[in-house]
Length: 141
Image 1: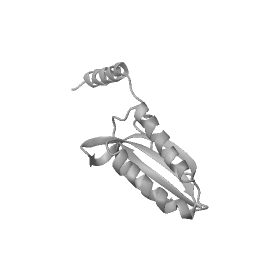
Image 2: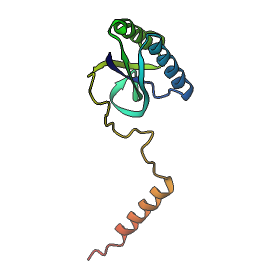
Image 3: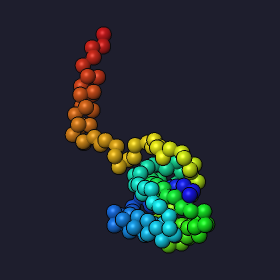
């Protein structure tokens, strides 16, 4: 069996319903080709290094699966047309990578913008006010 992963970048405005439909159809496609789905993960929203389709942000998804050699090429072709044709409006980019058969599935990803801590407006205003008060309290001789 060969292990593969698909990393795809969706538009930043993807809704939870669209993401769920994308996940369902992608996993169904993989299972229909007699492959074993290892994981389907939503990585989250990230700021892009350059614009893709006039978007500064995108939502990443990672799919990992195992497939027999005889089913490999039909599945890979089906996945390419799935992302390029059927979900062309939602998926901006995708890449399919071969993984080592006995390699670790562990990875480290940066914190997404969805899970980044937010700061309340009032706390920012208070800290800004305190900083300006401290600057004003210096005695200049």
